[in-house]
Length: 144
Image (tube, rainbow, N blue to C red):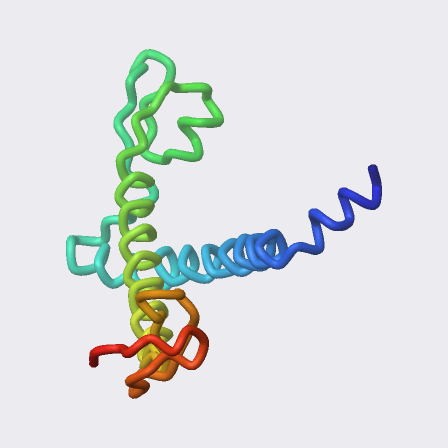
């Protein structure tokens, strides 16, 4: 059973998936930092010193009436955190755009498909050169 598991793990697609998940997680941390530390402060400044991550709607005003999301959570108040939702949407859009750019660049480096040099004989189905006028296997005359 261990040998089968080792064979399964060592398959190329499993390793590729594992590497993709690890790199994706690291990329997510970078994008979160970009959105929260670089992108959102100027946007918040333009919108009048608004910190999107701290925008929430208090659903239990009798439990908490402060201005901070952290304090509301600490007090056990039920909150609707729409600021976090806005940040998550921006994170998603930035990640989607970055993946689009990476895939677009990777596609530029792909080699075009090679032109076929052989074709199947219509009589015996063996591969013969494209320019052949007679099959080398069954000697049938082949039309171009």
